[in-house]
Amino acid sequence: MVNKHRLKPLYQLVVNNFHILVILPVISIVVLRKAAQLGPDELLSRFHGLRQVHLFLAVFLPFAMATLYLIRRPRSVYLVDYACCRPKSSCRVSLGSCTENARLYPYIDDGSFRFLSRMLERSGLGDQTYLHPSLHDIPPRCSLSGSRDEAEQVIFAAVDDLFAKTGISPGEIDILVTNCSGFTATPTSTDMIVNKYKLRVDIQEVNMSGMGCSAGVISLDVAKNLLQAAPRGAHALVVSTEITSLINYTGKNRTMLLPSALFRMGAAAVLLSTSRSKSRFRLKHVVRTITAAEDRAYQCASMMEDDEGKTGVHLSKDLLPVAGETLKANIAALGSIVLPPSEKLLFALSFLARKVLSRKIKLYVPDFHTAFDHFCIHTGGRGVLDAVQSSLCLSDENVEPSRMTLHRFGNTSSSSLWYELAYIEAKGRTRKGDRDLP
Ligand SMILES: CC(C)(COP(=O)(O)OP(=O)(O)OC[C@H]1O[C@@H](n2cnc3c(N)ncnc32)[C@H](O)[C@@H]1OP(=O)(O)O)[C@@H](O)C(=O)NCCC(=O)NCCSC(=O)CC(=O)O
Image (cartoon, rainbow, N blue to C red; front, side, top):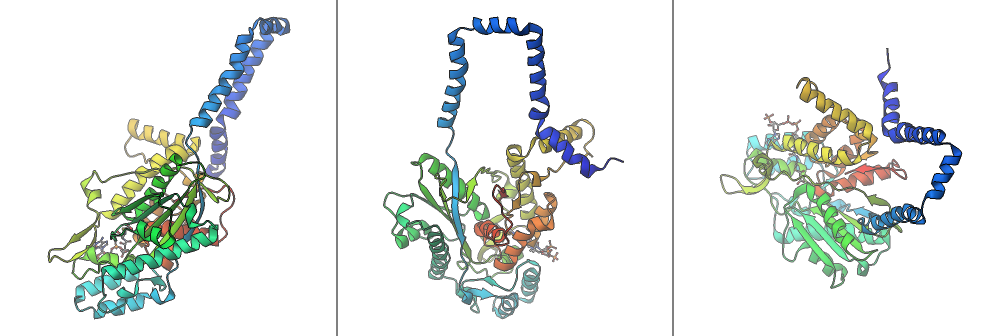
């Protein structure tokens, strides 16, 4: 019997190197046969027959086209370094203390308490995640000043660390992009950073809110686009965070109780540049997939009031399937750019077979290990990680950085992928040339 595991590397070798293994030899054979048919005298006389203008065009045109391509292609964007906030140890909360506190909240009934404690148990969070001190109180004290304090704590800790790591001075920052879904105060978090670090008056700043965990990657894309339009060597500072202490839901709606079991304090600061010097990573592709046009996707995570007028964040049960479908669409778009021809061909064949032969034929799930060495999957909750692992056929080792980040830091929303990258690096798993999927 043919061993599938031995056959696949051979198949990949042939398909991925088709041009070297097949096309180049075929062209060489055709050219050599033609040359042999003509003979050396005929070849020489044809060569002498070439006019200077032909030779000039043969050399100049490819050279001119290559130069034009190099001038017009978008500048590469590099990730100089990144830093993740580790909140003060006084902010640490164990699952036990979360449960004990919840039992004492005056507004929580038995049903809500049982649900919350079960969700805490099943969430995938460990005993060392962080919440702002205002949420340690019984009942929690949620206020604008508390949230501003949380924002300052996590953002400044991450940015201080980044400046210290990179040795860059605040005056060298040209672009500032921040994202935080729930906390949108005036002055904004970008102004908070400008004021604290006395950034230049002419920096370009963008402050994004309400965009959830996806905003981390969207911020990178915005910073990348701004950098490509800025003078060469410019620097962009991207700060991603979620502030947990603005709202504490006091109602009984389960979909709105769930966030308090999952979301935790955290932030990451990232320095990007179009200069390669001192950079650690290259930002290769950013693919956005926006599904807000569909009502089900639009409504799956929203800040709202329940029937009793109590404000909270509603996480619909549809969120998991919607996230799965969106991820699939996003990966398909990304896959068409990054996957090797061997995987694209298998996918195309399974797609054709499904269309032409039978709908029972399963679509081939590409082997993403052929395009990526590490996976940073958003730590949405244990259920999110389980679903992504099974739909992308990832190994336990692939999702370990996400599970460990969820365990250690909880769902820190848009900053979670940087904590995962930090985990991968701390474990010494990255090598030069590795490719990461955030
Ligand atoms: C919460 C979980 C860890 C629970 O794990 P379980 O294995 O117990 O899950 P389960 O599916 O069996 O569900 C257990 C019980 O919880 C209930 N349940 C599950 N999801 C619910 C929801 N969204 N609202 C209300 N109830 C919910 C189920 O009905 C069930 O109740 P019963 O047993 O009574 O029938 C998991 O379901 C999970 O990770 N869900 C995804 C959480 C999520 O939406 N994350 C994304 C956050 S947004 C985000 O991350 C983006 C951002 O940052 O902006």
